[in-house]
Length: 274
Image (cartoon, rainbow, N blue to C red; front, top):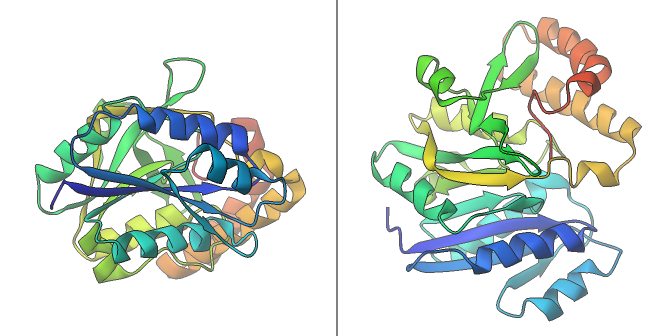
């Protein structure tokens, strides 16, 4: 991989404060190669796109006509990045703060093995050093839910099933081989689906021990009514198990109980927090 060409893709939806804070952290990034940032605005109605355009003139801003959801929204940025010649695409949630060495650590992990196609960061809660997710986690294909890995030791004992898209560096060749995020997932489970497809094509997942990102968690989700989020989560979870599990009905029904009714009690312990 040509590590000199990396484009970071951020998705904004009615959230200027978080997006601006994330962009300011990227301005302090310690990286000597060709690095650019593209913000995809998902049809914001609060004027945040205009404010971002004025406040960060060096950042490319792409405007979607409406709220396309996460998968379709980031795909717009990914396709633009590939057309610009990026060899690595760094998907980063807009409610994160990236320290200066975040990208360097991810690139070092990817370049250490040519079969590593997706690399994640350690995600820490914004107001503490507690680990929210060590890169990603696992999916219980029987009970229909996922759980975040919270330690390096756990990841070494059991390979991760997915890397969370809150901070995910993807090799260009992965997109060229398996395509983009499945746009039928409006929000939730699209990163898990993408990683399952990447693994199925022979690519390895990795977590960069030298990359830690602060994550506020739920930045986009907090702007939407909880009832809509539960329905969206349920639809995405059903779609995932129908794609990847031949006995999908059992985990899907079991997952509805957990994901829609019990999951709010365990926020931060499973997939899908944005």
